[in-house]
Length: 199
Image (cartoon, rainbow, N blue to C red; front, side, top):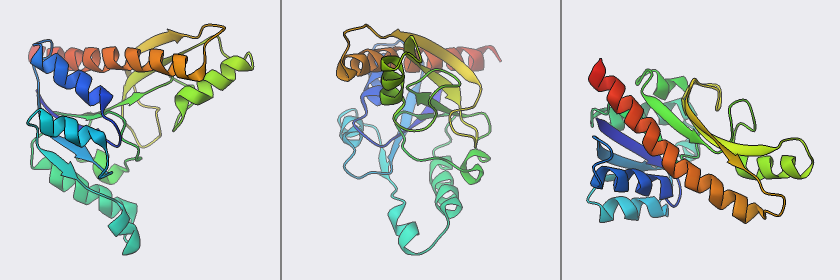
């Protein structure tokens, strides 16, 4: 399966995918890594693994007064040239509009560090931790879901509960969530690869 992985930061989930492919756990190939931030360390991870990288910032569009949909449409054009079968948002900090999503129907998946129906949008880990401190939740988690225009609301592919211990610091809980993310992002891609082979 041809993968495009989209990132905005350090790329630890990208690294989990790279490692799984190299260890033959995934029958997939990352054909492109895209970042909307030039300083994203994930671009260096891609370079080290010999994967093409593409930096595509939104700032020039803002400065020229162009709508977000134009950015998304142009980004879709660039990615389409690589003929991806699956697009994986692995820490991509940018909401994609229908101008992008309609080009790749049911082909875009996202990693979100909270469980379905809880804490959509950014800062899911901190929001979960603070809710635990206030007695509003008993645990946290993460999920991989299909991307739709509504944020973090698409059909869930896989989810993982992550416990919060009474004496956990935010950093300890965050580390446990990231460990779970690295597992389920590989598992979700594996499931979709197997589904594609069956069909």
